[in-house]
Image 1 (cartoon, rainbow, N blue to C red):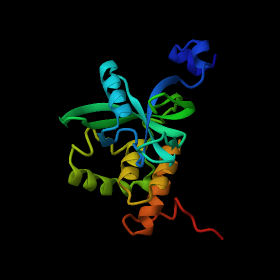
Image 2 (image 1 turned 90 degrees about the vertical axis):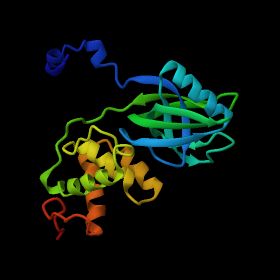
Image 3 (image 1 turned 120 degrees about the vertical axis):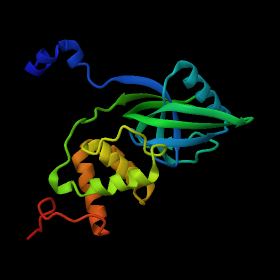
Image 4 (image 1 turned 180 degrees about the horizontal axis):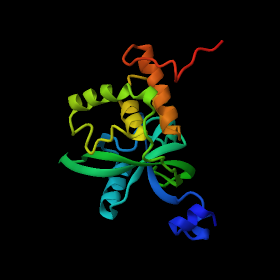
Length: 224
């Protein structure tokens, strides 16, 4: 057992157990859900209606993954391996057979294995990915914060719910990633990055190229 585990009081077996694994249903989509983000879903296929009802009854999340191949409707699509837990916050069936969901992103996960069920629903075993919480934003990247503060004010708490964490590199990176006008595959690549500062560097470079923030030569030195 390491000295850090001793300080934390973590048993050696637990420390060596590796990433936590869970089983859950998958909802492959043409969009990316980021941790802490809000996503509205219109559910009408029976497999997903049943999935949503089961998740609501058990108070458990399902997994949202970007589609790698296939479509949202019909035969089971092949998802990208990294997705996000989706916790149902609101559910309403104003029209028979159409369920409107509002979900909030939880932890990221990586698919270990998946298989379609008889009804076409994908179920998977996934590993939950660790998040580097509480990472401060480097001074050279701090120019993104005023921009995000303005966007958050424009969107309001419905689309960017509180609490806001403008000093946390992971939270700021996720919020900027979900609003960037880039292709969905680029958003997926940002989701897959484990280091929140690296994610912010990519986003900062994109914004600086469009003169939305000032490019810092300390972060991006000129190569000779």
